[in-house]
Length: 508
Ligand code: AHR
Ligand code: AHR
Image 1 (cartoon, rainbow, N blue to C red):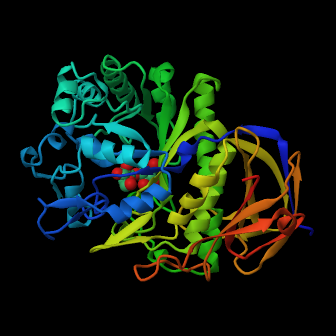
Image 2 (cartoon, helix red, strand yellow):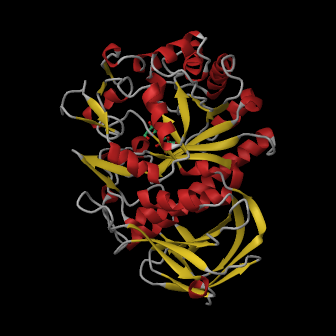
Image 3 (cartoon, helix red, strand yellow):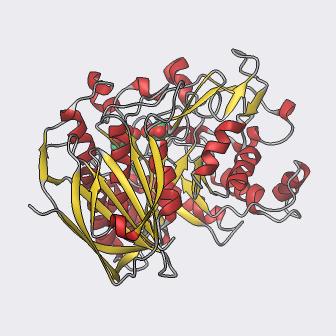
């Protein structure tokens, strides 16, 4: 079979929102305390905690479009009032949600990293903030006051409090989530869907008194877990939902099944194939959510999806320090292509989580390392254009076996391609994942309607093998290497290395 990739720069299939490359920070295990912050008096929960600047520098290079905080499940027990004001006035609490699982997930909550700390970090990184209000132990009034603290003018009660805490100018946070996984028995906000929808409306109506230009995210559920939740929530509140939150972790959900996948750290071709193909299963589940949204609201102007927690989750150990492989980096790139295919339906996505907890970055003592799944963000977040182009790929395919919640699949294409164009039409980027674990693949490339002359940047994400990992001694075993070539070197035929991801930037 002749392998070929044809891109048509005249055929724009939709928009890509950069917010799909978003992140998520929760006060869980060592994401915040021990991750973003380090403690110079180890073992003393009260600190002093200081920001790890080297970690922040790594995050800055990802140009993060949006960051979600403070949870997750933690959000539905979080009292924002504990996390403002002078350090010595902030209580040292038990972590309202995660202490139930003991030291593994975080027992204490020093409240050092609060609203101003999070929002200043977002500003420094140039990221939008996405805050999640507490509908579990909190009230609508408390949530509205939080909106006032964050976005209110300094002549409002809470705005004045913010100013006296050193920040006169409102932050202007636009994205607000209302509750987290309220469908789950494990959540502090657990409820029936109609009860949830009523609570959602109560909170939203109180919050919009403080700011009438917010985008609200309601708790949605992937149909695999609960088939009727989304429809019932829409029946009550459809016209007032801007975005529906969806969380998917494969091959889980291990908590629910009570099964731990002992082959988490194990590699090999069988697991590799299932993992790199798994974005199609996420797509299937998101399409099912799309159907409900369409049926309930009609597509145009209806709610979009906030895919605000996603990742692979194999075992509890990964909550402490995940060991991501090159395989997992290819999976993340496949997830990005999947979201490109979903178009403007996925308005935002947030990988769970930024540091240590299934993290993109990991820490140990004073050290920070970029895991294999850091590099897909580095590549896509900085290179993707605003418009999605039509791509046709002809290539061989493969079959996979079941791995946990990842079902067996047939005819998975070896090459997964996505192409984007900048808004001004001058920069075209072609992303190609070669999922073949053993062989390089040469492909004929045709760029229709685009004058590809001159220099081409070629970025290649790869490592020495499918199971290659980064560590503290070297966090560039899996990494991205950039070279500059001439258009004539990459067109009309290019060889894509086995188990690699290539981004070709034309017209840069
Ligand atoms: O990301 C870890 C946890 O997983 C989040 O707190 C929760 O929302 C999900 O169940
Ligand atoms: O959405 C169902 C389950 O909710 C996820 O798979 C689980 O990890 C999350 O908490």
